[in-house]
Image (cartoon, rainbow, N blue to C red; front, side):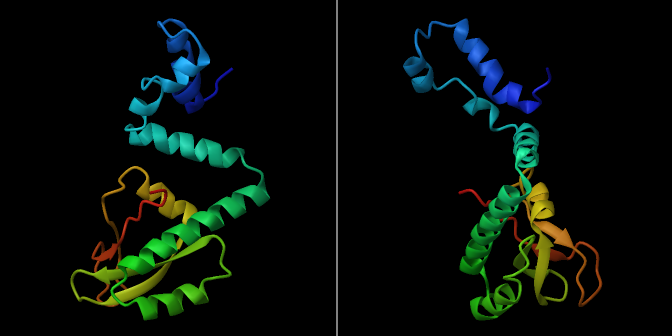
Length: 156
């Protein structure tokens, strides 16, 4: 049976523990070797995250994504250049459960934009590169990749 990346994060570390000098479950819990060293693999983490998300029933998935939307938007508000304007935009998006409200700026024309981004698509772009900014086309100057969208790491 193929368990996907669950094997890499859970099953394989348990197998490794069986062949080590760990004597009981308490030792295993205290042992720093498990899966923590694998978390640095962004692709593996991304695959695990989305495999887990796909396992959720529809209602739980929507609630989970809505919770993440709230976390991202709270962090966005803290780093917003214009928090009052951002909050107005965020308020307009409040009933759009699958959309996160973000503030972006164009590096060419300096236009501030308030945009809506699909939560799942945003997460797909943030997980592999949590410290990179996301770029898009500016609606003001029409230049491709000039609009800078912050990459907000939502679980910190």
